[in-house]
Structure formats: C-alpha cells, structure tokens
Length: 552
Image 1: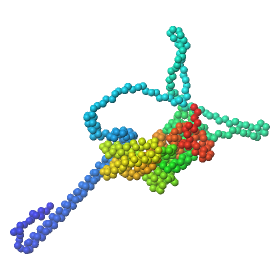
Image 2 (image 1 turned 90 degrees about the horizontal axis):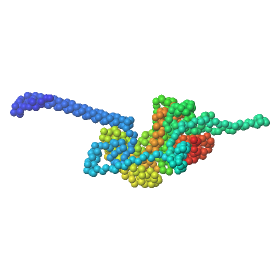
Image 3 (image 1 turned 180 degrees about the horizontal axis):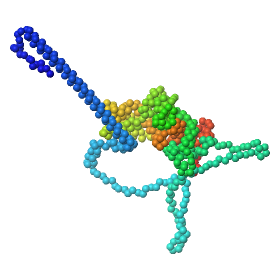
Image 4 (image 1 turned 30 degrees about the horizontal axis):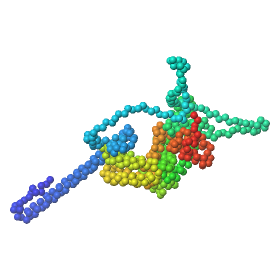
C-alpha cells in the first residue's frame, strides 16, 4: 500500500518557488488519489470476502440443517420399521408408553424425590390358580362316561357302593371343515294317457346359477379371504387337503359374481350414508396388475367412506378407483350436504370449498406427526412432548363423552375441551417461528397451524368426532389382507373386493357373525325383487338374532 504520509514536508521547508510548490502539490494529490483507489480496492476485496464468508456460512447452515433432517428421517424410518406402532399416552404427564419422555432432567428429578422420601415395600400376594375359560353353552356336547368296573364297586368290607355324584370336566375339540355334496333332485311327472303333459319342479334360485357353489361355500371363501386375510391360493391348498379340487381361478370368478350380486345393497348403503349429514373419508393404496393404461407396478386406490356417531348404526363403504385425484372425491360426494371428516390431503379441497360441505380435521393425524418428531429428534421429549401432552388431555375429555348423548357431548366439549384447545393454540403461536420449518417438529407444528380450523371443528356439533380413527380402523382388515394377497389381478376383482369388504365390515360393526350373515344374504338375495326386500338385508337393518343359524 502507498504511504501517502511518507512524503510529508514541514511547512518551514516548503519551496518558495511557486512552480516547484505546484509540482509538489500535484505530486501529493496524485499520491492521495492512488492511495484512495488502493483503499477502495481493498475495501471491495474485503466486502467480497465477507460476502463469500456469509454465503459459505449460509451454505454450511443449510448443509447442517439438511444433515439434521436426514438424520431425523433415518431415525424415523428405523422407528417405523423396527419400533412399536402404539401412540398410547400414559396418564403420567412425564411418560409415554413408548418411553420418549425419559430425559435426564426428569430422571434426575425422580431420583432426588426418591432420596428425600421414605421407601415403601408393597406386600406380596401369592398368585392363585388361573381360572379356566368357560366354554360356550351353545356348543354341542358329547359325553364320555368313565365308570368303575363292577368288581370295583364294592368296599373292602364287601358292601356294594352307591352312586353319590359325578365329577365333570370339559375339553374343547375341533373337527376340520366337513365337506358334503348337496344333490338337488327335481321330480318329473308325465301324463300316462296323452303323453304330452310333462311337469317338473322349478329350479331353485341360487347366488351363482349353474355353479357348484352353495351360499355356504361362497360365504366360507369370502370370509376366509376378506375377513381372515387368507389368499385364494392358500384356500386352494386347504381344499386340496380336504380332498376337493377348487382352483383359485374358479374361486376368483365366484367372488367377482358375488360382488356384482351385492351391488343393490351397496347402493342402498350409499344412500343412507350420504343422507346422514356427517361422513368420514380416507383412502388407501391397492395394486391392480391388469389395468388399461397403467403398468402393473403402478398404484390404484380404495376410497373408504364411513358413518359412526351416537344414534346412527355404523356403515362403511369401499370404492375402487385407479387414481387419487380430487375428481374422485367430487364424484363420491356429488350432491352431499353436511360435515366431511378427512385428513389434510389436498384432494378434498375442491369439494370442501363447495357450499354446504363443512370440513373436519383429524387430531390423530396431528398427534402422529408430533410422535414422529419425538422419534426423529435427538432431544426426545422436548417441545413435541408438550404438544402430545396437551392432545392427551383432549382425549381424556373424549373418553368421558363416549357414552353420552349428542347434546351432552357438545356441552362437555365446550366446557372442558375448548380451554385446552385455546392453550394449544397459544402454544402453536409461541413456537411456530422458533422451530425450523424443515424439521419433523416444524412440519408437525405447521400441520397443526394450517389445519387448526378443521381440527377444532368437532366442538361445533356433538355428532362429530375428534379424529378419523373410525375409518382408519375399518381400513385395517383390508391392509392386513393386502399384505397377504398383495394385489388384485383385474379391475373387476378390485371392484368386487370393494363390495365384499363394504358388506362384511359393515356387518361386523353391526354385531353380525360375518360368515352367518354372508351365508344368509346369499341365500335371500336371489329372491329379492323389491327395494324393501333388499333394504331388509342391509347390515344395520337386519338383526343378528333374525339370522337363521347355519347347519352344524
């Protein structure tokens, strides 16, 4: 750098000559300009260096945040794959059943409290003998009588023993499925005189005409696949073990025809569902191998709608569609008016913006995101635990309203749930700007913030629910079955599966034995002609005690 002060000259030594003085001043001026330019140059370099450093710091911060998000994702994926699925919260404010509230501060506080208090040892109580489960009275009994020999019925002194009682014990036995052939014999009559008049008894109506399958067999196969999750290829082996050959292709064809037979019931269920004013909806994936315009690896969806609130018998309807588009939701809820409960999926935005439909949120989805934040975070409990604790208190209130009437539920929620929700709202506002939005906790807070109007909607009407667990629980049998049979071969098979799942799960929710109900309606449906005939067979219209028991 130029030293502009190196040429400083004392005033008493300045030249007297004007021209020399001008030259000196000009030289000093040029030196000062050079110095200024040099300073500006270095300042520009320093500014660029600072900008580079700031940019690198920002890049480092982004990389660190990205690494933390990746670490959270890895921890969350490990938990989803290997950890417990339960989200149950214990009443102890500092503990979860999953053990995420095990912070060092809490443990230390507990140890200090234990040191300062006396130790109590609980008394020991000997465990009694386990009680044997009583076998149902409606099961047939077969008596096996064990008696003494005649020579043993004498006492040592030679007197004959007298019967004074008996000891009875019961054991449960099982007989594998019994297969029999039902022969339908139709008598034919002819006139012996004219020979032109021939009569015979009419053919009985069956669920699948010209088929070897009886309603009992169809109900057995349907219950096995859709109720118990047994794929048809396993059932094929089971029939082979019983000495009967029923190819899986044949069984699949039967199930498609059963699905078609159930469609009048599905239509009536849908009419009842859409007329109730409060419907829940969710969707789950399904894979269909042979579908026009889609590869075998692509996903399709089962859309599930349900009804459940005090005073209304439960209904669940599955419907297959190749897409998860919002257009499907518009079709499923065409003309519907009332409350619609769903998660935060944007596919419902279109219909919920329509006049007459009021959207409700799902607190279980909100809580699950905070649980995932605790599993992904190094801190464990932290802020996410505070949110979970607040939500736990909301569910405590809901447990007290479980068996209440609609009006009483509404009053209890206004008095007890609303203050807790106000506290939750304040907590969200306080922490929304403090937590990085890309973190799992930030996503959970953003979800609760964005869905707040829908999450609190259940305060408005006693019919409404705090979450959408009813439909999610109804989907669970389908998900378990999907893990076994993996995919549907055709669209017709997926549509039939949707119909059978709808009827079977609705029947179970209304207290029916799935097999007995299916056998009964498959016997009656071929004879149904009027709407009243079909309505009488609906799961929530037909009482379990009205079903004729199947033969033993």
